[in-house]
Image (cartoon, rainbow over all chains, first blue to last red; front, side, top):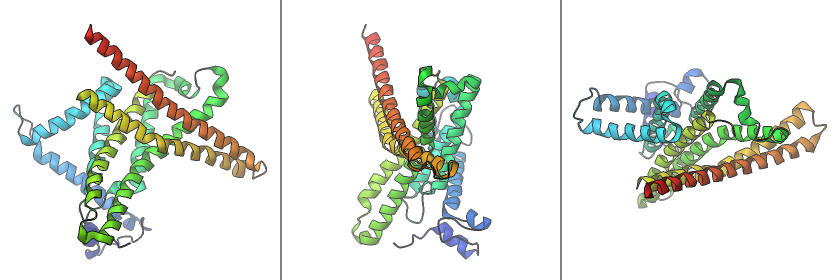
Length: 240
Length: 88
């Protein structure tokens, strides 16, 4: 397969910085210059500056930019409040909304030639998933104290030897499934686009996959946030 | 429209996720079994904990499948109750 041309990597190489040729570099500087890191910073900068430029000062009568953000943020807020209650939403809204916006932009950016999706690397998605996984246990422990262990004990006491391993396995499976689903979908999209572009790029072969890619990117961002919200509300609920 | 969107989100979110959860549960169960067999007992109990772990993994996969179904039916009941109330 042909190597994709990533413009940030080209610029960094021209500046004399070491860009790793494999997926991950060996030295610290190489790891910092890996494409998924540099494009993560690009997405972060994009989100920060777009938000800064469009809603630098809030007005009573919203303009175009403020209207857009009010719809996005208001929609997310309503959705979280419906699924996990007002209290948890107020507490965890910044984190979850950031995840949603970051994943959506990071997925979509890979459709533009010269860019790559940071979420097409397992490192990025696993980092996001570990944060969600740890914080849902934190919510559970804070809400129930030490009796949080009842969540893993099943409904009846004589079922405990059977239910404990099952609950532990299915809880650990969240860690794997959440990260690998996002990574797999986005990596598949990127690879498929690359192969189709190499085979028949002159005949617009990647075009239908690009259309599908827009849908997949948005749906995967939504699913990640939805499942995080579901896990949070489950940890908050009482054990069965 | 809003109800339809909610329903659609639930479907895509949960049913799109269940396949990989199932596979991940089985792999974690079997991986744990192999780990106990090889690292804890140095291969003396060789196939047994692997099989037990595999069985637990499969059951955990089915459990997460049923959890999604239970949640779906609970949501359906809640929606029905709400529509009943608005009808009266």
